[in-house]
Each structure stands twice: as structure tokens, then as C-alpha cells.
Amino acid sequence: MSTIQLNIVDGLATVTLDRGRSNPINHQLIKDLTACIQDFEHNKEVSAVVITGKDGFFSSGIDLIEAYSYNEEQIRAFWVDFLQMQVALASFSKPLVAAITGHSPAGGCVIAICCDYRVMGEGQYIIGLNEIPVGIIVPDSVFNLYAFWLDQHKAYQYLMEGKLLSPADALANGLVDEVVPAQDVLAQAEAKAHAYMKLNNFTWSQSKLNLRRELINKLNADQSATLDVMLKQWWAPATRKGLEMMIQQLTAKK
Image (cartoon, rainbow, N blue to C red; front, side, top):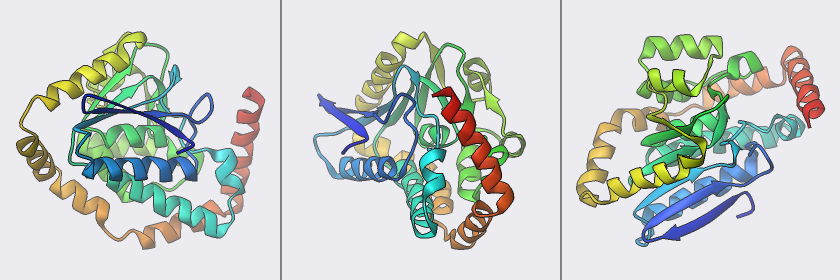
């Protein structure tokens, strides 16, 4: 797998997102992460998983530079697989902990909120869902996932505003569960995963799936109509212009 690194020690698998400095999400990363989680579901050597990033970035979200260049077939496949990645992560029956090592907007936030527990590093970092200001229509599955952790009113407001939160604000709003010094994020996430691993595996997993049943059913619902609208908007001249401006800004920063 070219976009992630895997390490398994004593039943705990650590998945490190490894795609450039900021781990932008392209189609290959989506496929790699989904395949990895699906494999771990049936791998008896893996009892829990931690997903982490790099210093300063968990993931900067969708790789707009690459996604902008996709043709119609490629961008449809990208979003179909992105939504399927949500399902794979959110319905994973074993403990799944996010070690948020830095910025985690948009797609990075989606990966994090699929997890059972989130540890975020202190610092001038942001996390949240800012798709609407970028020009991307938010599918209801993303809203349902967001609202699973925030109340529906707050999830709705934050999505419509494209609100990005600091680690302290994310903790206060229930978007993350712990904020620790940046150098301690991975160790603390691994400690939480080990704590889950000490509990009865079958009882823990079945309880997780029971508590998430409604959410998982919503994520599995047919979203083809929503996807059609999303893709139509993706190709709209105003959206393309907005994406071009964002790409120019990203390129200038590089």
C-alpha cells in the first residue's frame, strides 16, 4: 500500500497516513485505507487499530489539486469509494482510535469521527468539516456521522458555516475526547486502544455495533441521488472557479 504504513505489535495495529507532508486524501489513499480496515476486520492477529498522521497534520482533507484533474468517471469513482470508506471505518467492529497529530479539516475530520475515540494534539491546529465553503455539497451520511458526536443542531450549524475548531473547542464540543501535548498523541491513543483490548472482545464489539446500528444503517443507505447532485455541482462553472482559486493558494503555499 503506497499511501499508508502499517505496524502490528501485540495485537495493536497502527495505521500511519503517509502521503506527502499534509496527507491529502486522493483515490489511492481511500482505497488503501478501506482495504486495510476490511482486512483487519477478519485478521485474528489484530485486536484494535490506531490511525495516525504526521507531525502537524493528521490529514489536510481531499487532495483538491489531484481531484480537480479527475474526469467524470474518475471523480464519481472517487466519491463512491470515499462514501464506502466511511462505511468500512464506522462499521469496523474492533476498537478504532484516532491519534490526531495536527490539522484535520474536511476529509481528515471524516476519518477521525469514524473512530471510537479521538486524541488530538495541542497547538494551533484545526478540525472540522468545511466542505460547503469549498463548494462541495455535503451528503447526508457525513451529517449523520457528524451528528453522532455533536447534537444535530450543532452539527447542522457547523456544517452550514464550514466551522473549523481549535483542539480546545473541539474538546469542549465533543468532537475529540482528549487534548494532550503533541508529542504524546500517539502514545495516549495507543494506551486507550490497549484499555479497550483488555475488555471482553465479543462483548465490546457487539455492544459497539448495537450502539451504532442506526448510524451504520444510515451510512449504508443508497446515496446515488445525492451523489448525482454533488457531481453536477462539482462541474458547475462557479465551483470550478472556486476550486481553481483554492488550488492557486495551495500551490503558492507549497
